[in-house]
Image 1 (cartoon, rainbow, N blue to C red):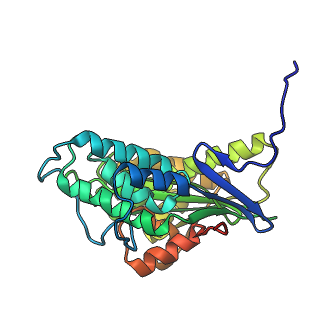
Image 2 (image 1 turned 180 degrees about the horizontal axis):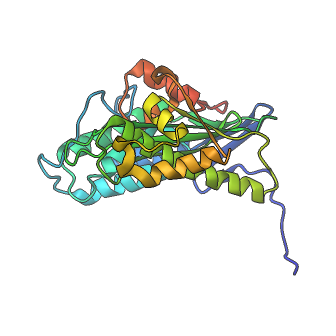
Image 3 (image 1 turned 120 degrees about the vertical axis):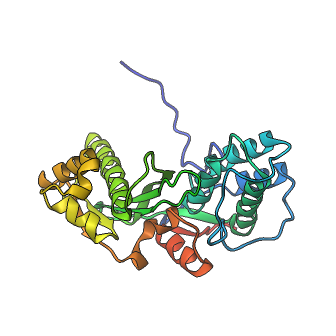
Length: 293
């Protein structure tokens, strides 16, 4: 079977994503898309702010309902597409997306906060670095019982191929965890599943891994449960996740290691942070200022 192909040269712009390439790698950004969003919601001249969400801010289902909730839903939809190149806003967008059915004015203020942050950082881009090292590393974290409405935890994860961020997510866990260890262990199980899929994809592309992936978790109890094949009374209610991770560890498919909370990159995907810490973790995600003017 034969197909007719046409070489269009190096990619520069695709579905709202601007691509720039030089000797230091590839840079992905959505500057024009951000400007279009700000124009759509009449926020082209708003003042900037250093983070996408205020530290310690709690959103609930209570409050004054929005008179035009469709405006909120349009903003959430636009911001979700932006997370394709902006992992720094994933947590804030996902958090506010949980109230899309009945948004309040407090939630709308949260949207405006994200737009103000984007106004000041529209030239940030995701740096894809060239590297001879294609080892996989993953970070997982969870903010226990963070939702005041249902007490479900917020889980976050990010996966690096060499020095490049290739996968990230921030989502509310589906069940209520009875301890911080449980919530972090569930986040770890999600990360193992994601890495298994990435390894399968790389194998299909004829890029086998020379070393097993390392999973970094900042909870010693969760690491111990993953390594110790003995079931504990406090973990029997999460038996499926426990057995899945242990199976991967015993088959030498992954290795679970401890990382101090201060160096947990996924921390910015589970909670609002101070300006200093947020910027530090954002840099570790591979977000830099675009070399383009």
